[in-house]
Amino acid sequence: MQHDQQPTAPPPNPTGHSSLPARLGLNHGRYHGELIKIGSVLHAIRDLAQARGWQIDLLPVRPGVELLALRRAVPRPARRIYLSAGIHGDEPASSEALIAWAERHASRLARLPLLLFPALNPWGLLQNARTDADGLDLNRLFHRDDHAVISAVKRVVAPHRFALALM
Image (cartoon, rainbow, N blue to C red; front, side):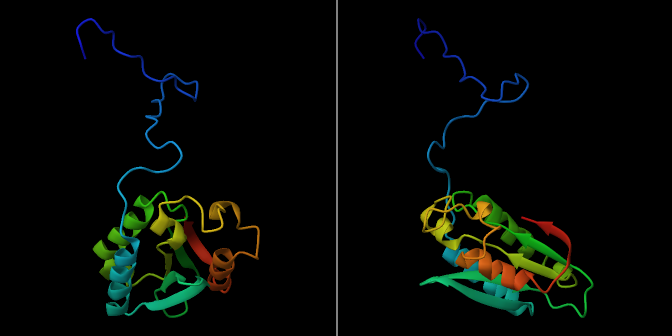
């Protein structure tokens, strides 16, 4: 900055609360940050799950796109734990964090009745898009049964009761 220029004021805080930080405004229209290579990440988590004896379900949701569901078989659990990530493809940190957490705690998780969906929107993660290939926000569709991803999740989840669900 030159000496004769005044510093620019920060953008107004859209929340109206002066104690909350203002948004930086860096991701207008879509996420512009670091991406993950979801194909290789999902391949690595499948290898880890297989090595640890998890049940792996690949659910076709559209041509060339499969939804990965991982289940830990624990004898007759009364309730399971449901964890999912990656519902918005332009928010890759949730998938990366869930997978890193599962790798780090694999031996502990082997004793828990888990159901994991590490990438609910694989197309969106590949395309860095919040929505699916049809432009739909999956997080707003769970009231419907006619969407391939939502219907696949519901089929896998239906026979189980959950003590905890984190999405």
